[in-house]
Length: 377
Image (cartoon, rainbow, N blue to C red):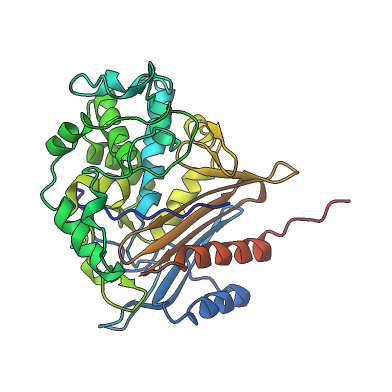
């Protein structure tokens, strides 16, 4: 079962270069996919959709609907969306590089990389290890500050403002202070559960392992080598290409820039043009680090997880490697079918209870169309 991820994070720090005037991803002309995109927009909540496809090494992009209802500007391959928890796959790629370069080990106790002692980050002598931060089994809470009471009794439309208020002035120092109060309720390593706190800690671990800031690592190791000029944390950069996100009532939603403590866990903005470049990286499993990031680290009852990536495998060994993402006004889905030579990025500027499910269904339909699985005999 494909779990859905909602985050609410973000911030600006990484300066972006201006995107190219013309997309580096050619416009797709497949009539069946164009019909699928038009059908996706028939949902009352749908605003815009950008599709990036990498099929047997060839890239194509499709844009549907609007990137902003107010300006009525069209969604294109260059439109930039918040990608939510899909940001975590960038972090796990950096983690795989660190492992391959001998900077750390997946089974290291995370406290080796923390700024001060945390005797509380273990359960009956079993510590949180680096791999647990990347496979959702850390037993850490989803949020710090851990304040479920702050959202109690709120209507759905009130939650974004409440979360923004809670995190607007919440610094990294506050985060590490509150980390002392965390009490694990079970041993790490067995129960997958979404945790932005784990993602935040993994960023800190990597910064110490590389002795570089996360933004420097992201730029130097992924964005610049891939030419991902439209990807970063700053919504004010390349504003002409910036999508506006909307909730299920069509109300414009805030970006996550004020939740500065959570940006690395899900605050990246990107476009189909850039995500196709990222798909090309992720489809190349001859790269030992990429292969490592796709390798299963925990097999739970309904989920197999590699390094942040979820992995489904059919009876013939064909894999579906995927991750979802969502913020206040955006939903995304990135999926790889390595044995079928296909990667798909779907970015939408809507956030509602069914948005991610609809993206998953759309990706499944595209995959069946472009890379059908032959019936076995």
